[in-house]
Image 1 (tube, rainbow, N blue to C red):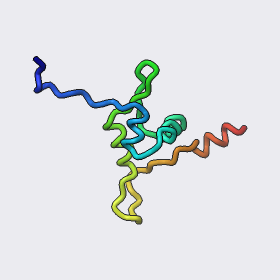
Image 2 (image 1 turned 30 degrees about the vertical axis):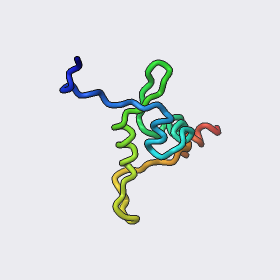
Image 3 (image 1 turned 135 degrees about the vertical axis):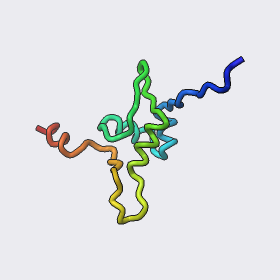
Length: 90
């Protein structure tokens, strides 16, 4: 018989599940991972997994209360940052 008072560990989601959770495509989430603009992830063996808390905190960076609210953070688009693109072209 299991002890129900022991809390379960945080759920880890694979890329397709994490993308659905965020309302993105799996490919967009892969691009975020490649460019370093996405949520924190973990590698377990060859598998990429995301903790629910990491997904939520990344999404919360884009929270605003009005169109004029500058917010505390920014969720960047899934593309290479401009400075590294210039370095890459050289």
